[in-house]
Every structure is written in structure tokens, then in C-alpha cells.
Image: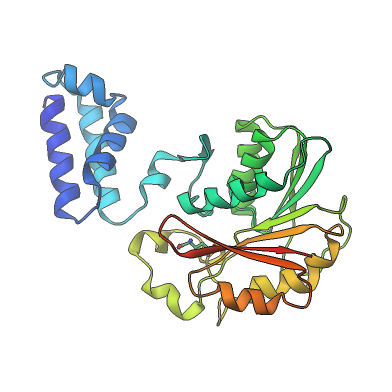
Length: 279
Ligand code: GLN
């Protein structure tokens, strides 16, 4: 089979199986499976694909058609311009979470070291991007699950940051000894209500439920952050939390006893996505 025929048969399968953005996904799968990028495909459509390329591409297309996330197939995904290792056992970084990084950067003081805690760090997308983009920071990334920690540790190496450290830790428990007091606590914790998990799109069912499940009302982790972590902040420090669209008001009232200043920040879909609390 020639490249263009192989590509088109994959594209058709993706379309028939209701994959949005099927052309983008097909380009990615073709490049990944056949080692042929879009330009090479366009300039040499008549080039013959070998048996291995055909089998590999079509089997990955079928896997994708079953709902398996593209990001897990590719094994890496871009966030803040960095290529993060992702796969089963870790949440895929979402584009709206980049806003959380940008908000934190507004608070980083260039003239002295800023200590940042990233709670429920997963792949490390938030904390490692901050560490890589801002030399004068020290970032500690707290994560409980071994499956996620292995990606996190790989990403520390990938981004070759020496100002970041992964810490195995359950955010729901009171931390025992902490390395230093943070200026910023940042977190995209699990915040989906348990009852809503079955309603999520099918790709999300392949992601770790532990990274999504925020308990009956979705606020389990925010309560733990209030109880166990906020007191660790330096005076005048800031908490930056990602949340679901209906949670910002609840978060502001939950944290009202410790907040001196608050702000809610919308994402590019005009949804309240970040709550910023200064203590
Ligand atoms: N934003 C994610 C989603 O919509 C949820 C991430 C989380 O629970 N922190 O699937």
C-alpha cells in the first residue's frame, strides 16, 4: 500500500468512529507509527509503506477508535512548550491548566528565590514548567501514586531541571516534615464529583480515576489543603487552585477564614477556572 492510501484508510476509520479532529489525530498517528511527517507524506504520497508500517499504523488507529487517548499512544504531550512523558497511570495535562502556570509566574519574585509547592503533581506539568521557566525558584512536587511518580521522575530528567524535587506524599494526610515553607502553593487536585465520573467522555475513563475523583461534592482535596497545607504558607503567601466551573464560589467561602485577598480567573472558555487566595 502507498502512503496516501494507508493514511486515508486510517483517516476514514477515525472519522467513522467519531474521533473529533480526526485529521490532526491521523497526522500524529501516522508520524508516530510510520516515522513519516506531514510534509514527507505530502511530498511523497506514492511512496510504498512497508508491512510493518501498515500494521503498526492501522493497529494504533484501531486502538484510538476504541477511545484510548491519543496522548497515551504517543507517550508524550506538550504543555507550556515542553514535551511531557505521559501514559497510563497519570492524568494528561490539559491546555487550560497552562493558565495556572501563567498566574503563578506573575507572583514570582525575580530578585529572590521563590519556593513553590505543587500538590497532587501527577506528571509534573505545572511544577516542572514553573521550575524550567523560572531559574530563581525551588519547586517541590507532591504526589502519592507510584504510577504517576514514575512519570514525574522521568519528566524531571526530560526537562533537566535541578531546582525541582518530587516528594512521595498523600496530600489528604497531614505532612510530617517539610523541606521549607512555600511562598506559593499551586494545585490542580482531583475535583470531579464521584457521581459524575461515569458521565465523562470515554477517553477520560482510561485516565486514573484517583486523579479525577474529588469525593461526593468534589471538594475533598480542597478541604485537605485548607486543613493541612495552608498553615505552611509563608505570611502573605498565595494559594492558586484550579477548579471545576461550578466550584469557585464554594472555594471562596471554604477558604474565607484564611484569605486576606481573593481573585477568580476565567479560562479561555469564559469559565471560572482558577481561584487565587492570598493569606
Ligand atoms: N480538568 C479535568 C477534566 O476535565 C479534571 C482534572 C481534575 O480533576 N483535576 O477531566
